[in-house]
Image (cartoon, rainbow, N blue to C red; front, side):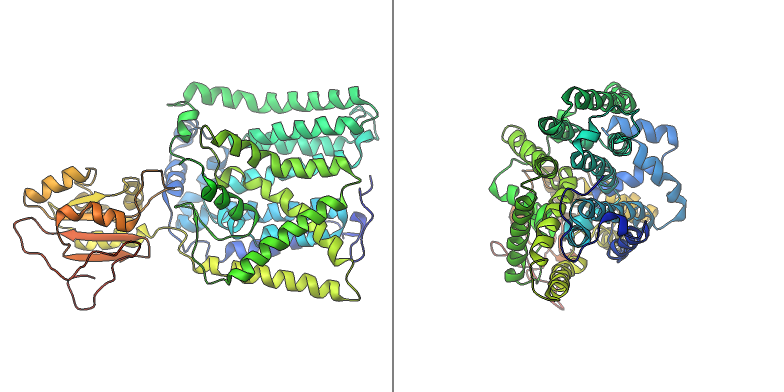
Length: 539
């Protein structure tokens, strides 16, 4: 089976790739940035749910997974790691490994289509993507699902490269049995990890419909896809049937927290997944990083141009082009259309589509570099890698996870028996329980589930109130920003002190109404945050 394209200058045919050595080298290189600071950031709400689930006995783990619309496979994989301690490190290690495996698969796919230079560029794009890296450092199953879908995509690409062989009976020695096996096994495994893999199977069948136009034996290709779909369904549907019998709420209800889609949130999704932006996984905004805007937009324009070149390069190979374009664009387009009526578009749901985007960009980038004179191709490749590294580095310094570990420590030190803790986001409770010593929880969290009316009543009854601002999970439409929250709690008076845990969590202390209060903690101006005043009652 030959490559669909003529191998450009600077590339090697797949047979000259040195077996598994180069792909494994790519895997190792991709793993390195995923291991940096892997256990430094605290868990946020979604990861705390992972920790809670994997700490259960196997039977309870499986039941809890199904009840909450999740396949148990990823959590069963993580469960043996719990006794090792330091869950921030050990529970994130498998996602880091799967994230690196995804980069390796992107290298293999792009190399198989257009040669080694295309594979290297595609690997750099996905390997140094801040969002792909962030998901690789999160104790969730999204990179595992992504890597398995890419196994299926690799098989589908091989089918597209040789449609006549793909249409032959599987029993025929010259048929594409290996490619079909990769597609079927990768798809089964992805579906048995996460239900987000269901759109992949729909996408694959749309690609199959396009491949029919090239097939000399359409009946044979339809037969093969029907057999593949039947095997995938037989190995996945029983688990989804069990889930439907077990879940506590409808599948649609599980998306009710997602805020409505607008142009800003659409750009947030596209920019974070495809255009290398450092995204805030909690507030649906890009992080404020020191990267020059000229570099950020330069990378965006470069990626758009590279994808355009890649599509133009594949114009005479419609099967391969359709495979990459549909696997990249169909899912975000589908979720965007659905979100007009019911919001479902989130970066994690379209994460795997970043891989075919990187492949297209790799093919286009290789086509461009091959036309540079002399050894400028090597210089251009190195320059692109340096720019992507510069764009990535601020990710490591950004506070992508709210510092509820610091907040737990501060509250444990300062909250006294009888105090009331008012949380803007009660989703913080399981995180505080994770990071707060158990002996302190009985005091700090004894009265922490009430709303603002409860806090005002407690203050009027002579109790101190700790008002805590900070998001535990992804923000719903009704969440406030800090100045809005500060204005909301103004009926409590002037706070005696304000403490900041990291950059995103504010802890304000209000004395009872019959006590004097400090007057040196001014309310913030619109769009600003209060600053600690050294030597004052504010800290």
